[in-house]
Length: 295
Ligand code: AMP
Image 1 (cartoon, helix red, strand yellow):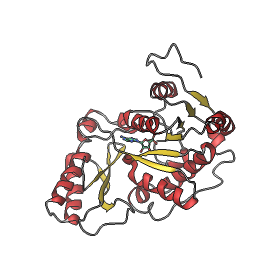
Image 2: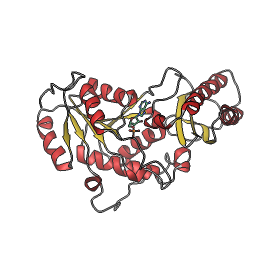
Image 3: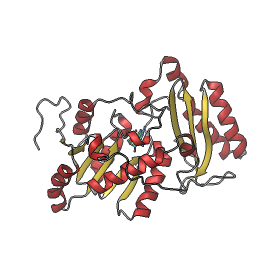
Image 4: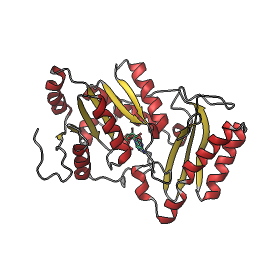
């Protein structure tokens, strides 16, 4: 690999692999060197949230691989697959500037050569929350992530707490399938006003962008009131109403779950996670917060 003199960030251009065979070949010497391989799966349109995963992987691992694949099977029929933001050149530069050595960016046919033949399903943690609001979404996620794991065979893989139910689902997938991959959850990176960074934030118009931080602010307010002894069910009801009052059009859920298992909570106790999803304009936003340690 060579340093790219034209890279204004001063980073090193990552090698881009388009096939699983090319990825396996590239990683052969890395494995022979016993370097720890860290994988950061992404759909691109990178922001500081993604890059925090990459930097954590850089700290932990001897070799960082990132994947770049907008996975159609995790989008519902009326969702934003077609218009999902894509900018491969910018993503490659950002990966390079943050120490990614290999980017696996396969075309659709490489991931699904015969269409969607095999579906990997995780039950339990995928029920309710986004699982209820986006039928089939987690099947798409676990199917593509298990393929990525099999093709890359990383030692460690990094996922954001931003998609908390996804993180729990991947933990379960690895446990059930015996992949022997360590899963690291990385804290949510936010804008200064609390809005969680998301590739979908570019969809927000000016008015919507002003309303959007209410998602975090409301989660934070509920966490504080729970600490003061408020009733959990009443607070979640209040949270739903508050989001509508703030200008959201529809609330998919505002709930507390056990942070380890995602089991529904019937009262306030330690170890809970508050999770919410709401629509504004045509955009669906999700966020979540530890009740014990809201940040
Ligand atoms: P995506 O490209 O949306 O599939 O996201 C790729 C990874 O980045 C997932 O593990 C996400 O949870 C993580 N991620 C996305 N946004 C954030 C954020 N604001 N903070 C931390 N991680 C994030």
